[in-house]
Image 1: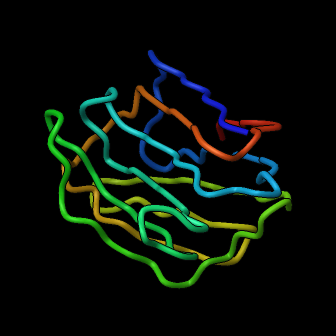
Image 2: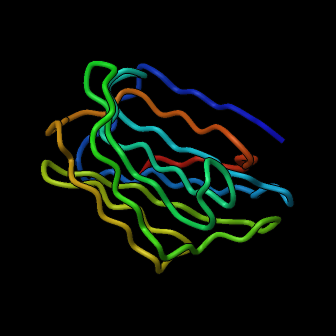
Length: 135
């Protein structure tokens, strides 16, 4: 169930929460959430991997500047389940991006570019987004 949802021309400021609710596919391999200026400049690539690219139940986070990927951060705590609903909240500030999963698990990733406004949000892969809210 590969799907893709893309928003551009957004104005998301530091401290604003992007709340996503989605249904993970029963046979999910992975999905990704990308946040940044555009497709080539991302402050966050958040990629839960159930089983793909030689990875099993790990979250890979990264950034991209001018189309070049940075150094990956791998989070071994994996709060996602195939076939289940999940809630994700993403907030960034000058120093870091915080991703909260299902109200409790927090993953922090450095805001390597110091981006002060996010204009691009994309979600793709084995998840069906049911709602998005900007707070």
